[in-house]
Length: 151
Image (cartoon, rainbow, N blue to C red; front, top):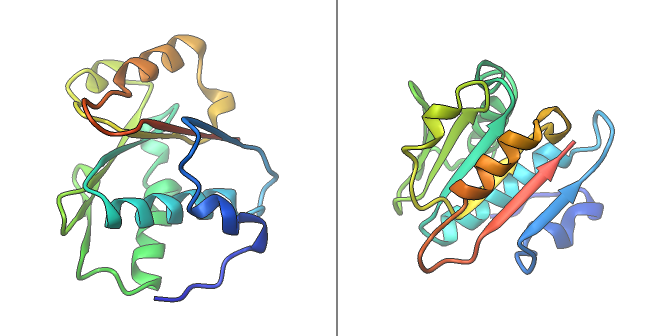
């Protein structure tokens, strides 16, 4: 599969060396697109569970989830990745999952296990208490852990 990407993000797509990555950019900078693409590529390669966070859960459907859906369709991956709307989730043929949650309902985070990657979209909206809760959710017994923050 070949996909043209913004040259600014080429190295970023396959860079998993750091535990924390922080992306700052303006509207239209394509940072969210490249983060979503990065997650899809990683989860196609390794069985993992990733958590995508926004401050308010209801904002996912028209933002992060629709972005993932667009990428899956654009790359013709709908035969290996299912985009489910109830609850919002991407399920991969290899058992990987991308789960979407909001910090407006923090109790719903407590039942999620083995999260090895978290993406906090619009992290400037997230309160410190919510960030601390997410750090506690980022745990897996054997895999490297990663958190991507974007704003």
